[in-house]
Amino acid sequence: MNAKAVYGIVGWKNSGKTTLTERLVGELVGRGLRIATLKHAHHDFDIDREGTDSFRHRAAGASEVAIVSGRRWALMHELGENAEPSLDEMLARLSPCDLVLIEGFKRESHPKIECRRLGAKDKAPLADKDPAIAAIASDHETETQGLPRFDIDDVRAIADFILRNTGLTSSTE
Image (cartoon, rainbow, N blue to C red; front, side, top):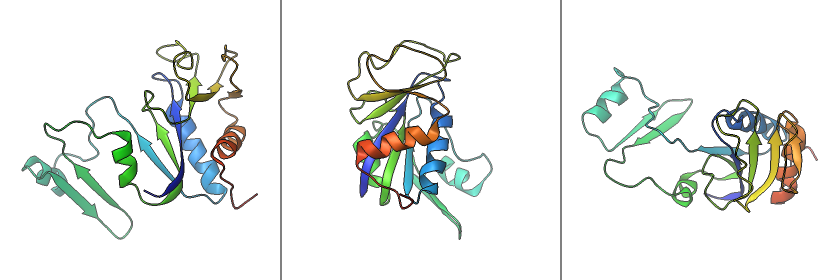
């Protein structure tokens, strides 16, 4: 992967991570940047559906299945008994881009923004124990441990903050 920068979006379940990541992608792509995302899932997931040819290939025992069309391609890799790949290993698999937004991987050391919502499953601050958290994005006033706080809906300001902190510039500046 030839990314100039990575930046994380972390928080507890229902804290707004996915919505903020999605909105940041739109904002940054709109500014002319090539953005990739990397999402960590804590549970078994499947991007394929039972009955499709690719699902049948995996069910038959294929360790990797690639699906290719004129519009997109996907590669599914079965881990079997192997360990989950590290963040660095996954970053190395990505195509060149300007910025990778990482959703999750909250225990890694890359720079991050912590999401906090009143409706989150847990409200314990992550920034207390993670020096890599550079700012807080929340839907309410909250203790920030001296870090900058953004309204979670102020996507433009959050994007500006990420660009400043990564040294990236957009084609619209």
